[in-house]
Length: 246
Image (cartoon, rainbow, N blue to C red; front, side, top):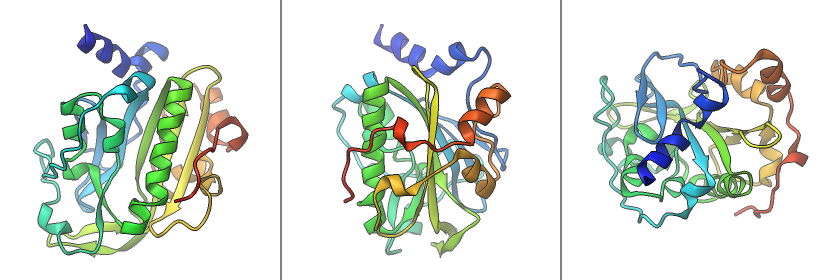
């Protein structure tokens, strides 16, 4: 019964928008579907250009412990990054789909430690402003019940590469959130891959602006009138910002 309920939650967007599954477009044509999130893998950058998943209030009640089982992703045909790429690199293994969003069962937690779900992040960024944003997104899921999250590095803007596989170090990261319940609304962030010096609300941008710098169409299946209205605005008054900068 619990498994059936979760499958219903995973496919909620299908029921909301008919055949619309809400996945963004892929500039690489290498889409990998795991059980609890989907990603578009960029071989030349050795990481996902986006990771997308549904986050619901019921998913936040689990107690699965963080296993730190970082490992290559066997589902990536072209091969993902290796542990050695990150070792002694000065960068953190930065989660795109956070482990903290997937505590509801051990399989979901384990999937977040595939290296295809990692991107090199400055430690002060990963453990500071990025962690704060992940916590805020969970608060929104708690408040609004169901949100759809898409996140990744802006791979065209690089701080360099790490490892023998030449993993791109993005200079910026983005997060796009679509609230599926009540009044439909969207919000997006672009944050520099460095220690955060501003409040989270100051990193808010329009979804359109993220699409322009990434070349990704985040919600291609939405009706144009709804899509245009939501993606062109960035009204922070519709979202609660209660977490302080870390």
